[in-house]
Amino acid sequence: MKHIWLVGAVASVLMVGSLAAHAPAHTKSAAQVPEGEAVLGTVNIPRAVMADGKPLPAGRYTVRLTAEAPEPVMPGAEVRLERWVEFVQGNEVRGREIATIVPADAMGELMEGPDPPSRAARAGTRVEMLKGGEFLRIWIVRNGTNYLIHLPPQTK
Image (cartoon, rainbow, N blue to C red; front, side, top):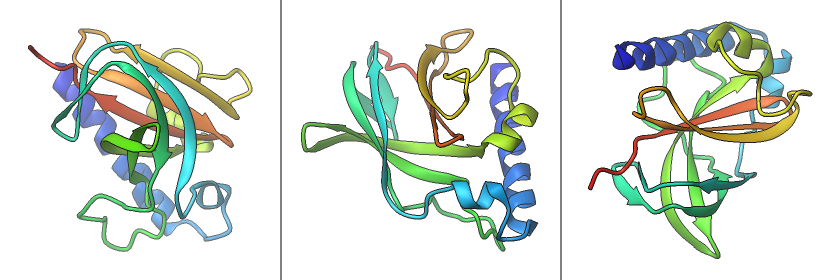
């Protein structure tokens, strides 16, 4: 059942991406997705997880958005709604994973549940284990844009 939820979330993001790809370039959503690299913030990961299939120990990390999109990119998409993020400690990249980018105006259609990390929905961070313990979700909001990162817990 949890995998069905994840598949549904991914399908919703792809649908939002399809809509964004056909939207005029001057829309608010297109303007909010950064084109290059950006530091999204700092997070405390409370337990060991897997990032891109590799172990990522518990700890405090700076999350950095890269300019690199995962392949394959949706044909015709002008706005890339998935990008790689890096987990950095000091000057060393300790892991990386794909972040789903959801503009603020599309967030209500995608997710039910608690409010975004900040009441103003302009900036904030939330790290939480999802129901059932299958994924640790890192939810970062910067300039009204949501970045969702899902990391499975590391099994011993």
